[in-house]
Length: 556
View 1 (tube, rainbow, N blue to C red):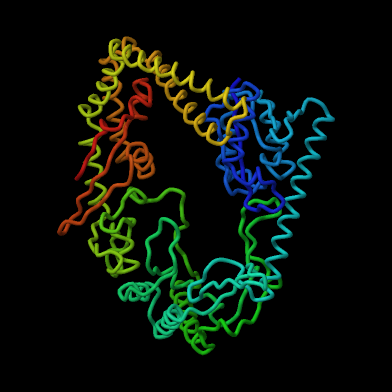
View 2: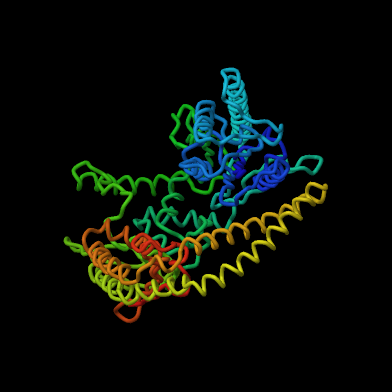
């Protein structure tokens, strides 16, 4: 019997047993449980959510993949450590169990070696009672965390991460154990905070302040993962809006989760905010704060007057961009995004592609000042894709490579080698299972078992693809006719509508396009992968079509 595993670790670990605190341990124990029952766990059916609350159901990637795999289900058993791993909200958990049951999947919990049954009203009640207990524990854990954070906030202790301008200092008790964390002013960073307020009061805008600080290589807030280091207009604005620099600690302004436990950040009423005076943390004088914010208020008033009382009248952020290459283009100098900016300050400003880091952060972050009209860049990219990638000769060369691998002699040789390797792996899996049953060291044995099972799945998939992909059932002439017809359609999509062109770029591009400035123009390069497109047209095995090394590489 084929079994699946679902493992989840909560964001809040209070009251959670040790064996549930690590998704890795949950998976290892579930695999051992499956072996003891004689079940086979397929690696593609191991679903994991690490650090996600059990009250969250829509934004849980592993759980969502698990439910999608039920249409139709290729496994008949689901193993979890306990029922609360599926969820800690009664209604949602019950509905998930119903969907599993309807799909013919039986759910087992390895901690108590029990099957979760829904066949009688009594079993449904027991399941509901268990879900009620899990949800009650979640509410208690949330309340414990909230109470602890409120005590810290009222005492003036640090309740979050690091804030620019301050150091986090650990305070220990008489026994040398950590009691709490307090903030202390960092003199170097505090001087930069004061300078930002002075520059703002003097009339300098967010972008100009960011460029000036970057040019001076001034220390900056730590960037989020994947972001460029340095000052940005948004980080300057955040400094100017933070009342902590006045010596006022404000906590509990926002609520991250709703009553259902799902992430939905909202601003709390001011009556619920906790304000604590902290004179020792003051960096900005009241007069400097008022000077900076007085100028910002004046700017907003002039904007309101100029726009007829409508502030921030910008196009709403769409799911799909209005520009062809937004999100697909990267600056080769700094690695940042190549995006759309305004070409001039005239009344009829032309839109151009340019390096966002250069225009928002300055030359110290990126020296690429080149800006090119968007229609010129779009035409060059589309011409290169249509001429170098979506060209019959290129596409058919890939098809010929796939068909050559499916030739009877080549396929028979490959299948023979893979079947021999499969027999070896099966023997190794059997030996590892015997060692586990005999009471051997569980952790290293499970590691080796996972490696062998993954290799077995690869071999089985490859053998099945070759056996079902005999070259004799593919007619090259028919495939070529289909491909040529679809190439014309693909080329038309690139130029028809921006949204359709962007969708085709997602299918064709294997990664971002890298733009390198050369004089007064850009040289761009990238990699294309058209395997999925071909598989749908020619009926070839997808994983055989998208082979690295034969995918076209292009530049323009």
